[in-house]
Image (cartoon, rainbow, N blue to C red; front, side, top):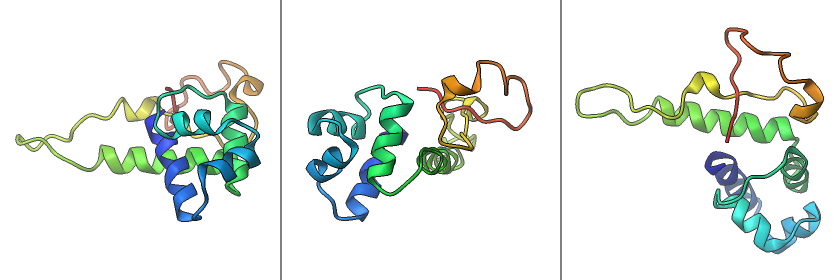
Length: 121
């Protein structure tokens, strides 16, 4: 939630758009969009897709940006003993290759394939 919300906020600010503008374009309430950006609400794939579209992105683009952020964080700070700090299991995060919802894909289509990354809130 935090990563995806952060990506939404950074993209909105990079476009110099207001919460009101993006919320109206996505057809969601401004307080709800604010909560999403702050990582306080779980959003359905449909809501995330609407917010992404309002910013000129596809859902896959939004999730790929969040995945990039997760990778950056996972390879970033190190503890004093030199070990990398853990960021939720990197191999348990999924990148979605299209804008279809996860429910449309079926529950086990990608289960167990090496290299798959799953984004779970």
